[in-house]
Length: 544
Image (cartoon, rainbow, N blue to C red; front, side, top):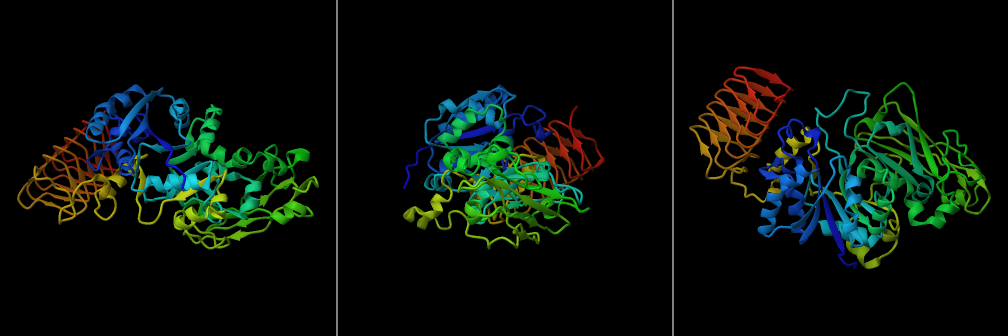
């Protein structure tokens, strides 16, 4: 077995304007309360459970590092992870930040985790898989969570969707993008498509922003200062050029990376041929079908036999979804046998019924890790298939993994963390016989009720005949009489006066809701006062 020689970098982020108004009063993203714990505490807890004693924490801006300082020192003093905090300029992207701390990395493998990730995935299993397979990089991938408020209108691509191209075994990442614009012309490494047979483009999976990188990849990152974001820039670039950097001789024999196949199949790279398979979207008057929801598109590359000695025949690859959409694949490349530039493609059809699996592709194989013992003892083809490539590690069934990178996700994750059958175990709190967490210091009025899947902070007061359902409350919150909370998040020091009803809303620290108010699907900023008897729906209420 490979040695566990690896280091960990946590990217704690900056002030994060995307989480407005949650961060509007100087609260940095890393210290936002989730289930009554700072957000940064969850990746640190995952490291501690894996037996990792130290890590590098990258803070973007002095405000972030100073806000975290006392908490990080306290958790370390309590036996937690020792954190070396490094501050980088505020304008840095995630790749920029990692590039600036690359000099602190001496191990052969580096784990890079976003500071907003919550997971119970065994970290050492992920690292062991990366080391055994010899991958350039391993990307943690999970199922994309959807909610009605996150989806856009029919015919338009939804927000926050990743488009990931996987091989039939779902162990290799051959395409990565986070913008629907790239779907107009999808470039796939031709040699890689030939090697695996077909590529399925998924929109029902997402990059969880947790990577294991080899030392050689870190050197590549340092040499590419124009790539600012890990997820948006570097990982997509690495997927396109993985063969070039892992097998330069083989890539040269296949035509290098000098050209590009056009939609008509003509080589743009001259006599050297093209190393990219281009999928061009064909407009038929409809939407992009399954790629706007939870679907997949399958494209096939030419067989190895055709590449070695074929006669240059060409064809089309089509993938259809639930809507009116299709894609044509055309590629040209130099023959391995030295016969000059040849164009070839194989036909493959894949329809989608909404579960993210193309029917034209092979049956879904076991997820990475299912055959872990066989892999570790045989060291055979399974390992060599990812050697020098960008590998994928799918979050196994039964494990939790989520990110707090939007306001919607903040509310969703808080409610999931409060659920005893979902993610409450990540907090380390003990659940009561009523499937909730209510400390002894909480004052409950006459006929007040706290339902299951709730977390109530220390020293809270819940007035007479008030009810709390599927809600997370911070410390020192005060509810008057006849208050109803459903699926809400209340930060520390929130007060809600008599007769108010609040549903599916986030109330930030120090905010006050006066008597007889009705709020639904709202976010109330820090210190804001909601006037009495007012009604608000789907609004952001914050101080200007």
